[in-house]
Length: 389
Image (tube, rainbow, N blue to C red; front, top):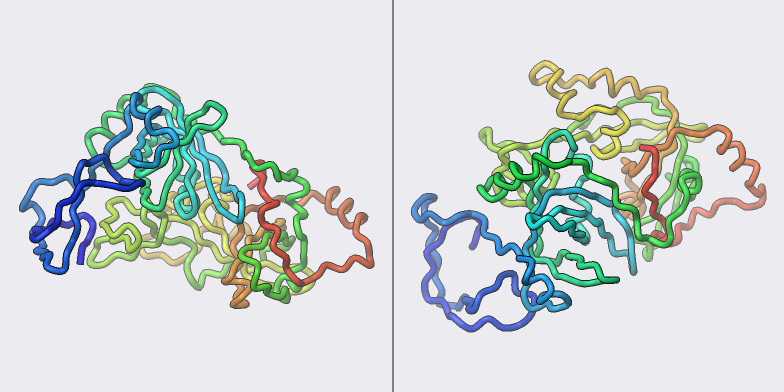
């Protein structure tokens, strides 16, 4: 019955003292909804209450909250570092970012799960001014003398939110360098660039015939092939929410994000290019999303979109020029591909083939060592940060 961002008149609530851990804000009381609680939605503007409210942790509170999960902390700062997605422990995904806080301290924040996946580092260019990041409801830990923040299931991320405080920080940080550095992986199982290019190498035929194991959640392989065609059946781009990067569809000219549950004022044009790839065995379809396609084409989808005539469905020449080119594709196979047997494999990275390395790899092969089609779960062993594309 409740919609975030809307106003309500709420009656018959129970007010109690706040107890327990992982409180999203520092408050002496909390309210509990009862069976007799009633709600009345109010028209916008009836009461002037800001949509967003934060309790940014101050320097004197940080040490008090280290390893204390009683109250969760909101943190804000200018983005200055982004790491790759890492897989740690029993398959947990995370991404580390670094921000320069408003009290001039560089702080690391670990974004877990979907928050790390949706934080696309390619959206934040150093020539577009400061990128002010807000991360809410974090825990604070100290490791090897360094204080780190970590997201929880209650956390949300806001980028350059249109509020006065963020505007003041943008002005303040516009006088310093906006270069976003790459954070080196802490994963001990890092492999070399050359090893990654040949990681679980298979042909397209072997890829399509691979058997599914119910114990596998994700599997990483590489495939070499030539782009034979751009499949434009589904278009070459999509319009996304700037916050969560999910697809948004306009209704009466308004873009509403189904994930964030709010209007998207400045939607982004993002790449989603379906390519037909072939090798000597057969052909299949790969998908290049924004983080891969933008590096490959060296231009944004937004710029290509603006060059086309209004309502044009043509594929830009920059994308068409990929036809005939040979690449090594790193794929992350999941339920969609393996269990359901569906194609449209998502490319996580691209490599330009090195013929010398390819020959050396062929010479290493044992003719009696036939690649098994039964996939085994070893995803935790794979992570690099120095891929070419």
